[in-house]
Image 1 (cartoon, rainbow, N blue to C red):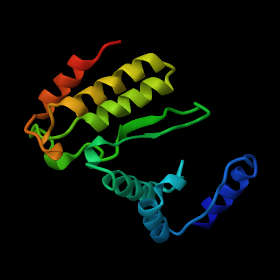
Image 2: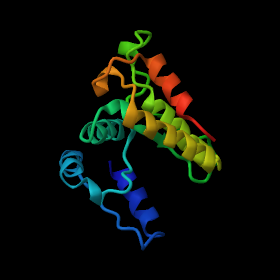
Image 3: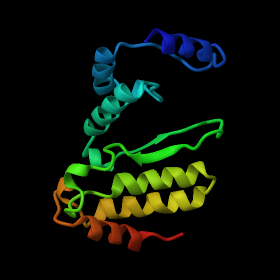
Length: 158
Protein backbone atom coordinates (compact mmCIF):
# COMPACT_ATOMS: atom_id res chain seq x y z
CA UNK A 1 0.00 0.00 0.00
CA UNK A 2 2.43 2.66 -1.25
CA UNK A 3 0.15 5.59 -0.42
CA UNK A 4 -0.02 4.64 3.27
CA UNK A 5 3.68 3.79 3.38
CA UNK A 6 4.43 7.32 2.17
CA UNK A 7 2.02 8.85 4.72
CA UNK A 8 3.65 6.84 7.51
CA UNK A 9 7.13 7.99 6.53
CA UNK A 10 5.95 11.59 6.38
CA UNK A 11 4.38 11.46 9.83
CA UNK A 12 7.27 9.48 11.36
CA UNK A 13 9.62 12.32 10.42
CA UNK A 14 7.80 14.49 13.00
CA UNK A 15 8.39 11.94 15.78
CA UNK A 16 12.09 11.13 15.75
CA UNK A 17 11.94 9.68 19.27
CA UNK A 18 9.53 6.95 18.08
CA UNK A 19 10.93 3.87 16.38
CA UNK A 20 8.87 3.27 13.26
CA UNK A 21 9.13 0.41 10.83
CA UNK A 22 7.33 -1.25 7.96
CA UNK A 23 6.47 -4.92 7.73
CA UNK A 24 4.66 -7.10 5.23
CA UNK A 25 1.54 -8.51 6.87
CA UNK A 26 2.73 -12.13 6.91
CA UNK A 27 5.94 -11.45 8.80
CA UNK A 28 4.20 -8.93 11.03
CA UNK A 29 1.71 -11.61 12.06
CA UNK A 30 4.57 -13.95 12.96
CA UNK A 31 6.48 -11.26 14.85
CA UNK A 32 3.35 -10.22 16.71
CA UNK A 33 3.14 -13.75 18.10
CA UNK A 34 6.87 -14.29 18.68
CA UNK A 35 7.97 -10.81 19.78
CA UNK A 36 4.80 -8.96 20.76
CA UNK A 37 6.60 -6.81 23.35
CA UNK A 38 8.37 -4.89 20.58
CA UNK A 39 5.07 -3.44 19.33
CA UNK A 40 3.49 -0.54 21.18
CA UNK A 41 1.23 0.60 18.34
CA UNK A 42 0.48 -0.95 14.99
CA UNK A 43 -0.97 1.22 12.25
CA UNK A 44 -2.73 -0.83 9.61
CA UNK A 45 -5.57 -0.79 7.13
CA UNK A 46 -8.94 -1.87 8.47
CA UNK A 47 -8.68 -5.38 7.05
CA UNK A 48 -5.12 -6.03 8.22
CA UNK A 49 -5.73 -4.33 11.57
CA UNK A 50 -8.79 -6.49 12.17
CA UNK A 51 -6.85 -9.66 11.45
CA UNK A 52 -3.91 -8.62 13.62
CA UNK A 53 -6.09 -7.54 16.55
CA UNK A 54 -7.86 -10.91 16.54
CA UNK A 55 -4.55 -12.76 16.25
CA UNK A 56 -2.85 -10.72 18.95
CA UNK A 57 -5.66 -11.05 21.46
CA UNK A 58 -6.18 -14.77 20.78
CA UNK A 59 -2.48 -15.41 21.35
CA UNK A 60 -2.81 -14.43 25.03
CA UNK A 61 -6.30 -15.68 25.91
CA UNK A 62 -9.90 -15.68 24.81
CA UNK A 63 -10.59 -13.07 22.14
CA UNK A 64 -13.66 -12.04 24.16
CA UNK A 65 -11.50 -10.20 26.70
CA UNK A 66 -9.84 -7.76 24.31
CA UNK A 67 -10.99 -4.16 24.00
CA UNK A 68 -10.11 -1.94 21.06
CA UNK A 69 -10.31 1.65 19.99
CA UNK A 70 -9.90 3.63 16.81
CA UNK A 71 -8.71 6.94 18.23
CA UNK A 72 -8.80 10.27 16.45
CA UNK A 73 -5.96 11.99 18.38
CA UNK A 74 -6.89 15.46 17.15
CA UNK A 75 -10.46 14.85 18.30
CA UNK A 76 -11.72 16.43 15.08
CA UNK A 77 -13.84 13.35 14.49
CA UNK A 78 -15.36 10.86 16.91
CA UNK A 79 -13.30 7.93 18.09
CA UNK A 80 -14.78 4.42 18.16
CA UNK A 81 -14.57 1.88 20.97
CA UNK A 82 -15.57 -1.76 20.58
CA UNK A 83 -14.45 -5.23 21.59
CA UNK A 84 -11.89 -6.77 19.26
CA UNK A 85 -14.38 -9.46 18.27
CA UNK A 86 -17.01 -6.92 17.24
CA UNK A 87 -20.64 -7.66 17.93
CA UNK A 88 -20.32 -11.46 17.59
CA UNK A 89 -23.51 -11.82 15.52
CA UNK A 90 -23.09 -15.59 15.35
CA UNK A 91 -23.90 -15.86 19.07
CA UNK A 92 -26.15 -12.81 19.51
CA UNK A 93 -29.14 -13.36 21.78
CA UNK A 94 -27.92 -16.71 23.10
CA UNK A 95 -26.58 -15.39 26.42
CA UNK A 96 -23.16 -16.94 25.94
CA UNK A 97 -21.08 -13.91 24.94
CA UNK A 98 -18.45 -12.69 27.37
CA UNK A 99 -19.12 -8.97 27.97
CA UNK A 100 -15.60 -8.12 29.22
CA UNK A 101 -14.25 -6.82 25.89
CA UNK A 102 -17.21 -4.48 25.47
CA UNK A 103 -17.10 -3.22 29.05
CA UNK A 104 -13.34 -2.71 28.87
CA UNK A 105 -13.81 -0.79 25.61
CA UNK A 106 -16.23 1.43 27.55
CA UNK A 107 -13.53 1.98 30.18
CA UNK A 108 -11.13 3.02 27.42
CA UNK A 109 -13.75 5.47 26.16
CA UNK A 110 -14.20 6.92 29.65
CA UNK A 111 -10.44 7.43 29.90
CA UNK A 112 -10.36 9.05 26.45
CA UNK A 113 -13.11 11.43 27.56
CA UNK A 114 -11.09 12.48 30.60
CA UNK A 115 -12.93 10.33 33.16
CA UNK A 116 -9.82 8.53 34.42
CA UNK A 117 -11.20 7.65 37.86
CA UNK A 118 -14.37 6.14 36.38
CA UNK A 119 -12.29 4.20 33.84
CA UNK A 120 -10.04 2.88 36.62
CA UNK A 121 -13.08 1.81 38.65
CA UNK A 122 -14.44 -0.18 35.70
CA UNK A 123 -11.08 -1.87 35.14
CA UNK A 124 -10.87 -2.76 38.86
CA UNK A 125 -14.34 -4.31 38.65
CA UNK A 126 -13.28 -6.32 35.60
CA UNK A 127 -10.15 -7.52 37.39
CA UNK A 128 -12.16 -8.55 40.44
CA UNK A 129 -14.62 -10.62 38.44
CA UNK A 130 -11.94 -12.14 36.22
CA UNK A 131 -10.02 -13.19 39.32
CA UNK A 132 -12.92 -14.47 41.42
CA UNK A 133 -15.76 -15.24 39.01
CA UNK A 134 -18.26 -15.89 37.80
CA UNK A 135 -16.91 -16.87 34.39
CA UNK A 136 -18.54 -17.34 31.01
CA UNK A 137 -18.03 -20.52 28.96
CA UNK A 138 -15.01 -19.18 27.09
CA UNK A 139 -13.25 -18.87 30.46
CA UNK A 140 -14.27 -22.33 31.63
CA UNK A 141 -17.37 -21.28 33.55
CA UNK A 142 -21.11 -21.50 33.15
CA UNK A 143 -22.21 -17.87 33.63
CA UNK A 144 -24.43 -16.21 31.06
CA UNK A 145 -23.68 -12.86 29.52
CA UNK A 146 -26.16 -11.24 31.90
CA UNK A 147 -24.75 -12.98 34.98
CA UNK A 148 -21.22 -11.90 34.10
CA UNK A 149 -22.38 -8.34 33.42
CA UNK A 150 -24.26 -8.15 36.71
CA UNK A 151 -21.21 -9.48 38.58
CA UNK A 152 -19.05 -6.76 37.02
CA UNK A 153 -21.67 -4.16 37.91
CA UNK A 154 -21.73 -5.49 41.48
CA UNK A 155 -17.95 -5.19 41.73
CA UNK A 156 -18.00 -1.60 40.52
CA UNK A 157 -17.15 1.04 43.08
CA UNK A 158 -16.45 4.60 41.98
